Image 1 (cartoon, each protein chain N blue to C red):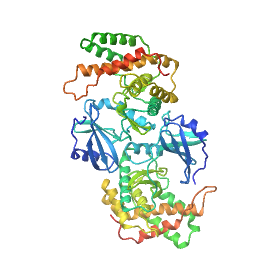
Image 2: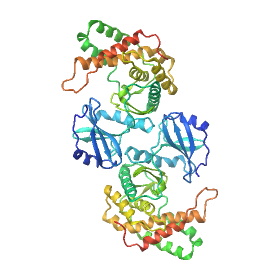
Image 3: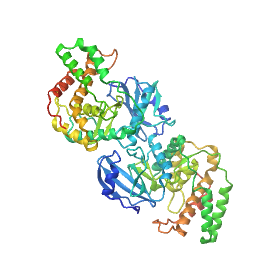
Image 4: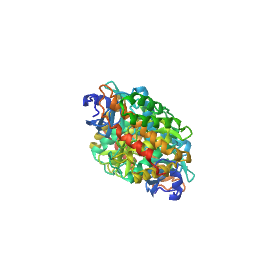
Length: 312
Length: 312
């Protein structure tokens, strides 16, 4: 669950006076997410999501929050930050940096249809285009260097064959040169649980706190690895083709991107295999986290290695 | 009706490629408004309103459009402008400055309830507060000087007793000193047809093209003169009290504002009496306008002059 800091109506009423969104009607904790405290806040004007940041500092937040505002201004389906009466998106509540955003419609979908994958692909491409002029910049804190450092810290705890496999895959990634591929702002964590689907439409992308500047194709690979995956770590070809067709209807991939695509899918799998290995073998003290199965991304990666058809 | 410039699907499809809001599904002209061309545009992402500005120039638009964006960012219920991929709100279509905004929910209400008047008053006060840090500035082009000039141009065409009444009222306004009252951004035209009500809630304020910097109380008076009026030009006390209570729940009026209130209501009536006299007696050549009855605001003003209770 994700209420680390309790917020009461008595805390919230004076806080809401610094905003123009009416007075408090209801307040309810949200049991999702692993690093921040989230509440649904209903006021006389409508429903909002309140986030208290437990680990990110206020100085780190402008990149994410201004990005969400930028995307909302371009009509991208995202939760839009609400500014307070001092024109600041970030305020403070119970000693935590705090953000109010609009409530996007829809719910998380576990078993998406090809049509829904196409819509997510299309919106992702629109997001990539809309962020082309975004002024913020943040290097990817979880890029290849982080994967390697993380792998080094867990190799000794892994079955030797798996460790060797990961070593070889990381060596291959290190040899790749993605520097000439289109770069831009990526969400970098667009799993099914970070998208609300409103029927067949994208209700909203949420949780931008891994967003950064990186290769756009990397974002497509992360998204496809989750949205189009089967229970055994394989990729469903129909959903994969739909997601890529939706994406390319807005931003067609270049020849260089098509050539890089198989290795990019493997890199995107390594990103989450290594982070899950870390969470599994070295859980942070006191962190309330669901240690997700690292084996899942081992299987996803293995399937990609064996694959001959990549749907593009 | 308000389609002065025809827009076809063939015009719109390339235009929409400069935005991130999907592809065209439906296009329908809107028969409301008297100075701009408006269409409902439905895309694969949702429904928007397209406005082609027929008389305002692109250089005049930033004040209005940035204001709408500023208010939307603060959670005020307004149509939010959509930026194109060059990060501009104003684009060009069929040689006209053009704006896309989100579709706000609800419909125009002819006979509002006291509860709806309270919500409008509350949202108006929130709008006034939210705009306190808005950077744009525009003097009111339709202030006292404009009322007097306009009156001068129509006195000869009016029944002498009415002309004398208007002269006396203008003289009273000229003697008043409102300079120390709270100033800020005002909508200045918040009639019932510029608000969509979503049931009992404000769905959105629209049509900000008379917005300017002026006395906040003037905006309250304009709004009350329309929302709380009866067919014979009187004010319904229950609705008036509700609107003022809603407003003051967010921004209580100062003693100076309460003292200025009766004369402000008269000034707000003069604003629309004079503009309707002009439209009635001197319609602009070729302008497709509904000449509204100037006598209505003559009656509203007369009732205010005779009034002893002002609901504050």
